[in-house]
Amino acid sequence: MNSDAAIEHQRRRLFVAQLLSFAGLFIALGLIVFVMYERSVYHDVDQTMMQQKYKLLSSQANFAIDRNPLRNGKPATNDPSPMRTTLLVFNNKGKITNQAQIGMDAYAYLQYMKLNKKYLNVKRTLNTTSGTYRTLLIKVRKSSPNRSYAGKYVMVVQNIDSQMFALKSFRQALVLTMVIFWLLALALAYWLSNRSMAPIVVAWQHQQDFVADAAHELRAPLAVIQSQQEAMLTKPHAKIIDQTEAIATSLAETKRLRQLTGDLLTIAKADSNAVQLDIQPFELNPYFTKLLRPYDDIAASQAKTFTMDLPEHGTALFDSERIHQLMVLLLDNAFKYTAAGDQVWVKITLSANDWKLVVGNSGPTISDEDKRHIFERFYRADKSRNRQTGGSGLGLSIGAWIVKAHHGKLTVTDVQPHGAEFNAKFPRVPKVL
Image (cartoon, rainbow, N blue to C red; front, side, top):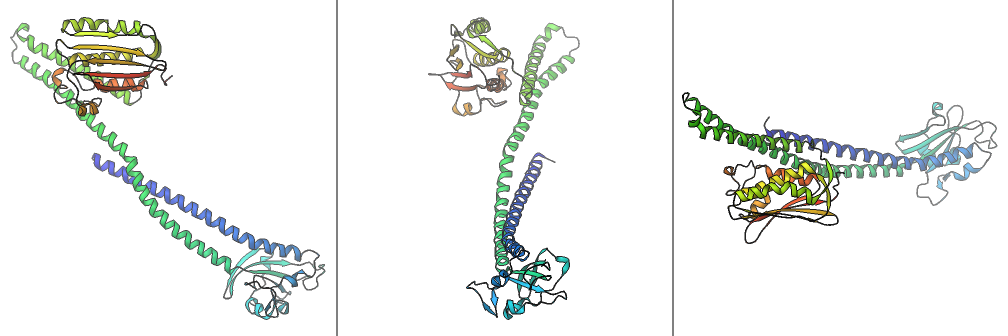
């Protein structure tokens, strides 16, 4: 599977996983809302039925007739739902005995209700041709003062057509809402999968570029060394002095190869977070004075001017080895891209919360386009940053990582009339502590 196919496969997996997650969440939410609404509807109905039950089983004798909504086929109140609650009294043979009390119209709807003793004290929902009813069957004790119910089975019947219609309407609205949310989830999952994959795609591309560039950088010195050694094999009787140039070239390429592999190892450790900083307090003036002293001789040997401006007093916390490595990278870069007569300088300033390291030179000015990419791995500008200088294209990338590891920031600015300055700003107490 190539990289594009692997990325697309991973994108589809993320899309499906997120879509299923959203769909499952919406379904669960919809079910919870519907169940809660349904329970609230039935709760009101059941509460009325339980009130009827408690009164039937109490000593109140005449309440039931007053609560019957129909008398002789006519509504007792202005209730638009006259058959909302009714009491049906059954004898032991299962025949309704209170037709006169509930009225003929109500009896016409309820006459098909059957006595089923196994549902005693059980709330039921019955769907009939005349409507939907909620029922509760009660056995009234024989000692009840109301002789109409004493020792008989009484069924509390409540018409719930309006509630069922409300549930149906709510269910339809909920299904429509779920469909809309699923469509939104589809679009959101697609957007999130692409957004989630964006850094992965970038990292994948960077990895491919890194491997390709590293292979190219390693291949160049190896090819030179191989060609020089093969040329020497064709001259088995030649003296060492005759092969001085070939030997020197091979040694130079070997040195370059060693530096490149070291840089690659540093980058790999940085990417895997395997490098742990050893933060210690250091007095800036003596530390940098000792570190920078050899560069006076280097500048003199190259007919360049080297100056340093250090604070007299002041302490900062940093990793000595990594800051030393950063200085070597920046100064090596500064000397590499300057000619005889140019200047190289180091300036360190200290404030209450941070300290700043500046390494500058009066060599060629770096273009704005190069500034945007100068800290990328293996990046070289077309003219000044080329392989003839001996660099691997990893130095500034490693330097940027060192500064970032100290929770600082590395930038590059122009120097007038020409030249460049690399500015590294560090907190005096890094957050890594």
